[in-house]
Structure formats: structure tokens, C-alpha cells
Length: 341
Image (cartoon, rainbow, N blue to C red):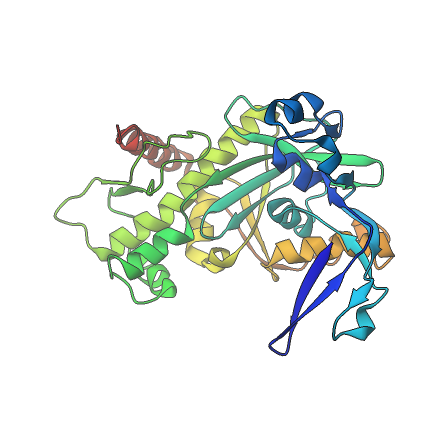
């Protein structure tokens, strides 16, 4: 394995020799890995013409895979252990210290990715969600349910770059905060179709409920609400699949810094939205995996104690209003579906 590190604008390479490995969270995303038997699937490999001998050995996410062996320009890295490997979204789940069954996190980036820890047993989804392995620690693996929305932060960029209604992302928050609601406007950001739980590649974006009283403040509010509605869809599906009632949603990613959107999210889901001080949790999760393997932290309890909360957003919307808004969102989604032929 060869790694690259950028230091002082120079790129250096260093290698870990004689090791061909991956971890459970990455292996399961190849669609060749049996996530219950924890091995490469011979049937799938045969059907796809993939020799199993070329596939890496699968190890826990927190594990000393080897050491840096060959250094070019950075002699002090020789012998440093390579000790953590985890997928992008499972890494964020680990970085958010969602170590217990039923805990969930949502990452607000270009798209949105919601993951729930479902414990030591796989939960098969009836709602078109992905069932996978979040991580492996020691002899045990932890499973997860995952759902994604294709367009989240990208919608705010669309407002800025294509519609030119705003000059910066923070301006969207500022304008949205100047109105109490979207004035009956609903926006479905199906620019590239709809992700989970719909999986409709033929859906396209819809803005519905336009009246003469709509202005750009209402459009900004509707855009922020559309992101939270998509996450509500995913959370409702996850709770239905797992029979777990979530009380706390941990959030991260660049768009999670929006106070108004996080409050709308709490109102729409009816659960507390918990934002940490450090919202770059994917890299943090990978570091935690490596630290566990090398003794920096002795267990996940010690890691959880490191988590510092920035703010908790508490639901404040009446249930009747919340239900009406969510029902109207569902109506808007139906009007966006199956548009392309």
C-alpha cells in the first residue's frame, strides 16, 4: 500500500509493504462482501468474473495493519503504525461517538447522509435504506442503516450561483430568518432525482405553492426547509425499520453550522438536534479508530468523554403544525416524481 502526504506544498510518498487489507465498512460497499458471514461472497465474485485471490484481507476498522516501511523525504515516519481504516459516513458516525444501538448522526454536505447504529445484528430495511457494516472493533462488528439525499448544500450553492438570489451561503440563513415560514411554498430539490427512501431517478425539482406574496426570503426559507424535510423522510423510515424511537440526532458537516436550519430540523423531526464543537467528524472517527488500536484511548467510553457539545436544538413547533407541513411536503414530492420519461 502506498500513501501520500502533502507537507509545505511538497508531496511525499511512503509505503506499507506486504499488506493488502481493507476494513469491514469499506468491504461491504463493494457489493461483493457478505455482511452476515463476514467474508467475500464466492457466488457474486464468480458471476462478476472477479478472482477472489485479488481481493484484500478484511480486518477490523481499528487494527494495526502494518507500519510505514519506505519513506521518501520524511524519515521520521518510518515505523509509524497504520492503525485505522473506516468508510466516510461510518467514520462520521464513529466520530460522533454513536456507539450505542439507536444512536444516529446526519452529515450536511453537498448531499445529506443519515446513519443509525443498529447494534450487533443486521436490520433489513423495508424502506429502501442501505443495511451495512459501520465498523469492526476486535471480534465484533456494528451494523448500520443508511439513507442519503442527493442535494442539500448544493441547493444553497444553486441559489447563489445559478439563480443569484444570494451572494453567500450565510445570506440564505439571514434572509430565511426574516420570515416566520415559507408562506406556503414548498421546494423539492430533485435536481438529480430523489434518493432514499424514494429512489426515483426520473424525479425533477419542483417549487410549488407560489403566490404573488412570495419573495426571495420565502424561497430561502423553503430551500432550508427542503433539506430538513428530506432528513425527516429518512429518519421516519429508519425508525420504522428498526422499531427504535430516536430521541437525539447528532449533526455535522459544513451546513450544520446553520442555526436556523438545525432548529427547523428539530421542529420537523420532533427530536433534539445535537451539534458538536467539531463538525469535521469523519477524519475524527478515523483518528479514533487508530487511537484505539494503538492505546491512545482505552475504550469507546473514553472517546465519548471527548465529545464537546456546541448547541442542542430543542423542538418547539406544535405537533399539528408539524404534521400539516410534513403532509404538504409529501404532496409536493409526489408532484416531482416520474417527471422524466
